[in-house]
Length: 475
Image 1 (cartoon, rainbow, N blue to C red):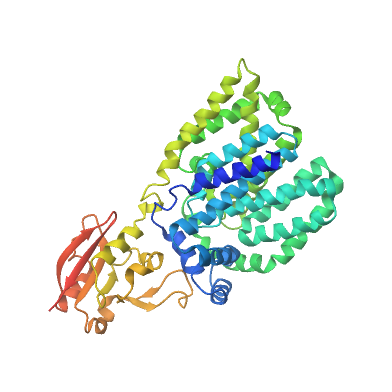
Image 2: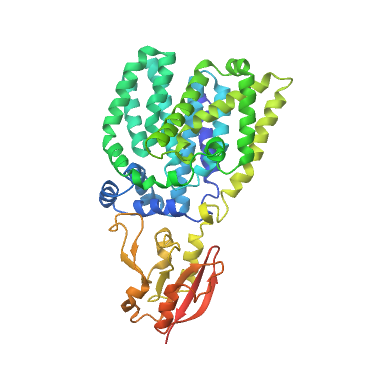
């Protein structure tokens, strides 16, 4: 098998690794936004994102829409699309390393990347993060080829860069990263590189403009304390694992101390490319977050993780010249072992943020409802279940609905308290009310009081992981 074949075989293995059991966790709020968008007809999807929110994700939503039109809208399909993205990024990273003349180091970097907790997470997420890494890797690989062959490769670089920016706006920082690399290595290529990227930015300018105009939708970043030792030093690659983050830093420090060995076993181009890929987007994102508007959150830097894997592999390779190669092998195995608990945890039923149990709520409603019954979510409870698993709510009356998505102009419905829409109870014999699980009896929420005032009594309750589904009936 040739070098290209080995790279794509490794990419296939990475895709399978990411895909395995990715369907187990319930969808969570961000993924429900994906589902809401991708289930729309393309024309309606474009109208919604360009007019209201998430213009910066439009290309990804369209791609997933057509993928799901073939493979379905369930977790296995939508997250499988991300797993394919991880596999493509892994293969392209291996090809980048081979292009730099270090085939063995390339395979090590690709393996470390595929096993990185950030990437095994990205493969379980129905969001664009895995594909940002794949597109970033494609942009770097094409740059290396263009530096050697020129011609139409610069055009291809501009085309792929356009898609990269359109899929995720933050990847536009790769312009500065690639410019830094070229200026330090091959200055004569700076002009065609700039031309390719400026053409890409011009082509993607509608998405850039709309994304900037909709920046208020990420105002939550500044409110959540974006800059902490955890979010800056661990989360971008370690996801939820302090142990992995600490181990990685130890390897990187050893590689820095043994910089001559690191340089010899990698190469100047390897370290420069990897450093530019990681450091430049990081610095720009942090700088813009501090000066202009909040942009920094760890998962937004997923597209820089192939470069980080290159740095990690070079540091790990520096250990080979110690007394025995077994040291390097032992450290590599240790990194894998440390990552395993995180990998398993990412594939538990309630692994998503806030221990999302949308699927269990939907299944409970489905199992205990009949056509003509009504569904009601107490304020603050997860109405996302209606869109994550719509088939489980077929035939039910949505009592609180005022203005549905997408007419509301956001990724949520406009709702009204039941007390203002009691006429909807006419002809409804049974209501399923979803309330918080911990310490809340079925009769406590305000909507429960409204139901009781109209003759409903609680007759059953079914706890889920975070919620309780209560049945109210009247004669």
